[in-house]
Image (cartoon, rainbow, N blue to C red; front, side, top):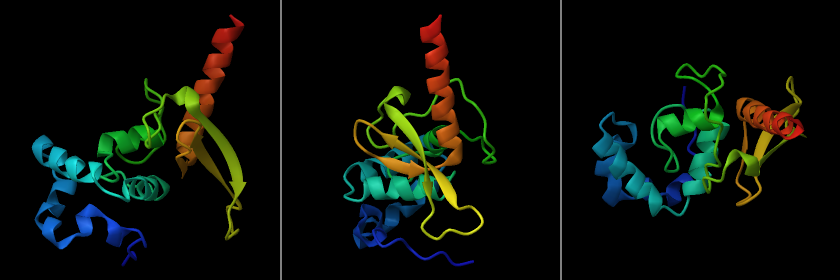
Length: 153
């Protein structure tokens, strides 16, 4: 199956010909290679677009928008297999690393409609980074529910 490249991808640091020798670093197991990939992401003009695309499309492997596999799965609140699970830590904003208390959830209509007419989104109150993910929204909602119970005690 062929997946078309997102329209922002051509503007990425990883798409530049002079960085073609660094592409393997984005899917490497060695920490030093992952660090090199993240270093490239840190100066990329489409870093946020890349991270949003990875989260919206449930990319669990590789470095996307400066987020490694562990950070992607933590943000999505999923395990290695992509199954929803609760971690001891709740998601942070992938855009600015704001705490979960800054994240809000919403249910919005899907533009294309279809079988699943709505989708869950999470938005950061600090930097306005927004991504779609039912599992992230569930984790953020659970965090806020815990906070409410703590306040009641």
